[in-house]
Amino acid sequence: MNLLSTTGLSKNYAGLQAVSDVNFDLPAGQVRALIGPNGAGKTTFVGMLSGRIESSQGTVLFDNTDITRLPAHKRMSMGMAYTFQITSVFSKLSVHENIALAARRVVKGGKSDVDTRVSEVLNKVNLTDRYDQIAGDLSYGHQRLLEIGMGLAQKPRLFILDEPTQGLAESEIDDFIALIAELSTGTTILLIEHNMDVVMRTAHYITVLNFGEILAEGTPDEIRANEAVQSAYLGKS
Amino acid sequence: MSGTTRNLILHLFVLAMLTALYFIVSEYHSGNLARIMVMAVYAMGYNLLFGYTGLLSLGHALFFASGMYGFGLAMEHLGASAAPAMLIGLISALIVSAVIGFLALRTSGVAFMIVTLMFAQAGYLTILLAGTYTRGDEGFVIKQADRVLGGIDLSQSDNRYFAALILFGICFLFIGWLVQTRFGKTLVAIRENPERARMLGYDIQRHKLLAIIISGTLSGVAGAAYALLFGYAGATFAMVEYSIYPLLWVLLGGAGTTIGPLIGTIFMTYLINITSEFTSAYMLVAGLILILLTLFAPHGLAGVLRKKLLPWLP
Image 1: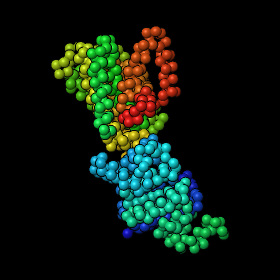
Image 2: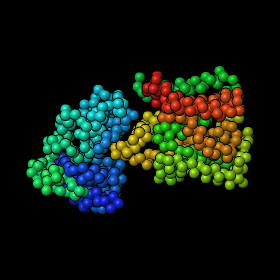
Image 3: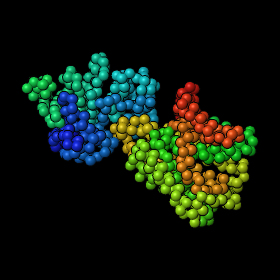
Image 4: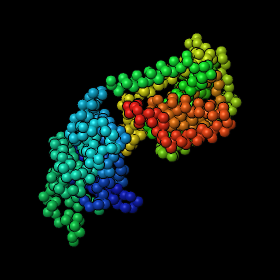
């Protein structure tokens, strides 16, 4: 069953076709990587999925509901979570409060239930000892982990991550891959990623965008062998 | 000690201090303090929107005046007694802030400032144009005989002080509680990073609208209480100065702190009182001090306190 699918999804920026006519299906439980050269329309595409960007044409179905016209916050309430390409945390608030703000959306109980959820998440992203720190004082890598933690706290059904490993150190990337593997047992994941090592190690299936269109789709092995993908990336003709 | 208990103790301590001050200071100062406490309610209302939600309004005089005129006109023309007139004042401010909020929230940033300013000016002009009922610029005095609430004559200075203190206390504890709730913490999240808050699933517009309504209603309650306690309603209170004052009080006292509005209102009132004893150019002195404070304490007096001494300050 598809958790998310799009039909003819397009975005026009005053004549520039950033995304054109994308038909995309994401089965529940899959880890999908979305790759493509810079300017291929990846962020615009997931922006239309999450509701940050209004689509020009086409429809988005989430869990068999048409969400094309829903505002972003309603889509998130339906079980989506989104991490930004450029780290976006509440930089003047504590690490704890950052996660709590995310957790309060899904934890219905009182303060202690929220706190329990926050501790679980901080543990998962290895930030437990930074509980009280102001988020803006964390290192870049830790801020990225914090943002991923905010996504986790929402217990999403669909987790969209826009270049989550950008700026992470090698060791942090290994932790991230382990985290995705653990998470993928219960969550569908859509990952925009430039780091091919991460893509090949995490994704079940890959979609390649180029010039706003789907260039290829397939398993990591298929994509690795695909000549059109190689030429788009390496400029071979 | 949990954060909630500590905050409650702080708030009760401030109220105890204000109670004690009445017995310590002269009548002149207790009269000032009564006025300051009412204006601090106005500043607290403003602070909820500016300090906690991050929306800078330049039109709060409209909400203050809505409460004041809702109260005053109900007494003057409907013959209402103080209690129902207060309620009418509160409801007037609530309705006006809901309508203005709904319209003004279609904009943001500088446009929001301008739109709120324009609405407030329109409100001011309406008061002048409806001079038959409002007596325009001149305003009207609320008769001493009418300023009685629950059998207590509020034109008496001691009754007035404690009425102001009770009103301030209720609003102060209410705000102290509100900013610790989920709702209050969401407002702070919206102030800090609206896009992130939206992408966590929070309905930003609804929260902002509620913040404007609560903020405007508190401002209106302050306006109605001012008319009740000091016996006068006039168009001056709807002028742009009265939109700027709460901004200054909150900036000086510390935006986004529960205690900042009170500190700022006390500070500014006495700054003007004291400097005007020495020179007629008191606004120049006040202006200089304001500039210095903004330069060296951009987060206001309570902001300094929070940074240097009490990091937990709510």
